[in-house]
Image 1 (cartoon, rainbow, N blue to C red):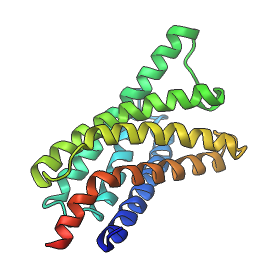
Image 2 (image 1 turned 90 degrees about the horizontal axis):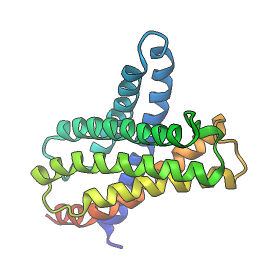
Image 3 (image 1 turned 30 degrees about the vertical axis):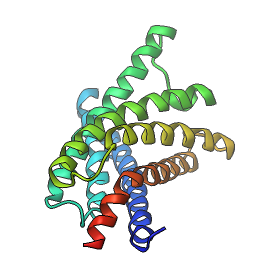
Image 4 (image 1 turned 90 degrees about the vertical axis):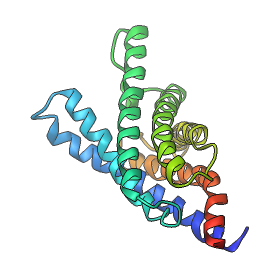
Length: 208
């Protein structure tokens, strides 16, 4: 591994881990009081955009050599992840209602079914997120390739694998230790996987 990769790739992974974990936590905390004064659609939009805003902001610190205008990355991440998470949750809920007649509760599902549902949510979220961020990369870092498919696959695998890991550690998914373990592992896996398309661009910029 080259020296610049050993510096930038772990930094990107750390920032993405902290961003996704902090964003999910902030979204959950913001959603509770909002649910008492606003309808479900407004709450969902606020929570999901909060996740994207926190993630995008922290990620820009790892992309200083790549982005000329970081604001657009933050905006794209907020919109892409906000729409993607909301759309993914709607898909899972509507399919669950169609099959069982009731809205599924992720925390009460069995291990494999929960992992599958989170795979769908992660893949959908990652696709919208990857598309929005790809538009920014095309303008500011054309050397980064395969961003959309990598982001979609990475978030799908990160969500589902982290869910299975929570059960492997014998933690209750809906408990505080379970949530912390899930968001920390999901952020780490997602950060590590999405560092791959950036390596060439980071190395090129560092060499210059």
